[in-house]
Image 1: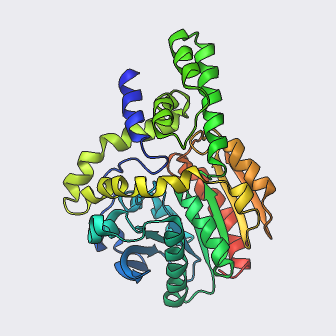
Image 2: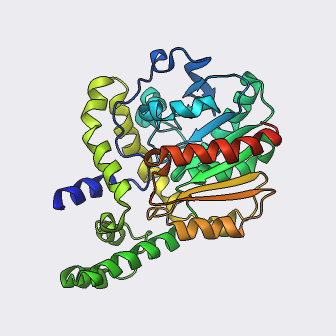
Image 3: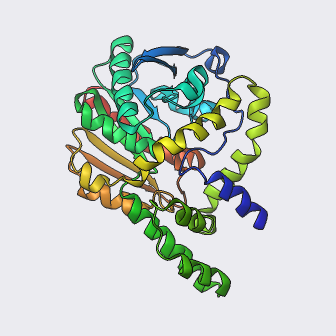
Length: 350
């Protein structure tokens, strides 16, 4: 158990990306060969070249733009996991400014790495996708850090999006940290771990703005994560070397981009308070949340879902799943996308 917690703790240095993904799919044309739509390219967005992948079985399907988490961790290494989605959607992966292939092009010279700039990039990309793929609107899916980006995108240009899907939905980050702290303390009490209780009481309630105090408290977070999340993080950590071996040029950019992006974007994570700053969304809002998500605490995600005003809302809670429900509960997640999101998005112009 000690080794598992060490692995998970190192992966949790990032709030909620996808660890260090395994080499599951290439960032090359061969990754989706045979699809009706299969493209990987750099596109000029926000004044710089940014990498996207477009894959799907039918050009008639709605376009779904995925906004990855991290900050700074792309989803292209997990592209094969999203292949079943391509029956229902044209799936677009995007390496944000400072992440993955896009980071590889500019490295530490990447300019203007802020939440506002990345959200504006996303809006510009959405216009590009509508124009080039012949759509009036697209579907937007954000995971973890990507939910902050995606919500800001919807606020900027609601007319572009037939639906917004949040998973690992961030809301009030300070409230999330307090929920985590209480769960850690409760577990230590149940297990009569006097030493851990003493350490936690000495730290006090978590203050995400105090990096030293917050880092000391977060080392206990793996003790309360969903088992599926622990297993996933361990799997990803173990696959880091395979990713680099399979992709010697692009693979190292995954970790390097995350290392570059995190200190620049973490202050925006700490300040997140969507129930106050984004109480209205001008499109259909779907929350597909793992029941046992602790990183973006499900009680807070559901609270945000309930207070936000939107023209249409739908909540799906996936039993036993955690923060990485889209990857660890793939059948249930795709079922919600196909049965709930897709028909509403089509009715709303996708």
